[in-house]
Amino acid sequence: MNLKLSACLLACSIAVALQPAHAQSALPEAVKVPDGHRVMLETVGAGEITYECRDKANAPGQTEWTFVGPKAVLNDRAGKQVGDYFGPPATWQAKDGSKVTGTQVAVAPAGAGAIPYQLVKANPAEGKGAMQGVSYIQRLATRGGVAPTSDCTAQNKGARQVVQYQADYVFWTTR
Image (cartoon, rainbow, N blue to C red; front, side, top):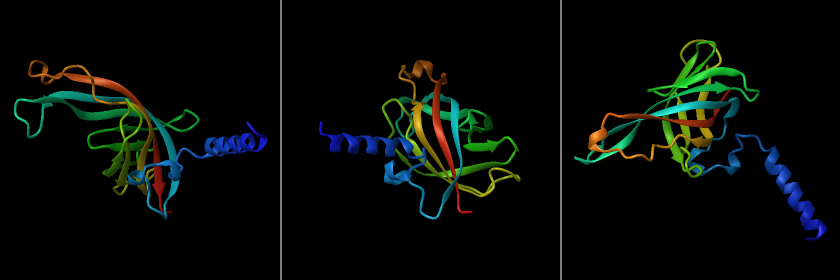
C-alpha cells in the first residue's frame, strides 16, 4: 500500500472514530433529527423489553410475540444513572422527576438481532427539570431487544418473555 493511501485511510478512520454518537450524517434519513435542533443529553439505556404471545391483529387463529413494554436504566456516558425509561406509554424520566413521552415519527433497520433505530417527537415535559425543552428523542446503537424466536402458539398464548437490550437515547432541543 502506498504512503498516501495509508495516510488517507488512517485520517478517515480517525475522523469516523471521533464523530459523536449522535452524528446525523451516518444515520438513515428517516431517523435524522430536523435541522435547527441540538443535542442536550446523551444516555445509554440498558434493560429489558417484555413480549407476550398474543393473537395476531387481523389474522384469526394466528399468534405472534407482541411488544408489551420496556424497562431500562438511563446512564450518562460516564456510567452514572441519570434516569429511567419505561412504558407504556414510552416514558423517559430524569432523576429529578421530570419526564417526557412522545410519538414515534419513524424507524429504520439496525443491525441483525437488534431493535430498529427510532425517532420520537417529544411531548411537552411534565415537571421542572432535565427533561424540559426536549424536542426529539433518538434511539441509536441498538443491541438485542428483538422478539423471542421461541414458538408462540395457541397453547402458550398469554406467556411472556423478557429479552435484554441496550440502546443510546439522544435527547434534542431547540434551545
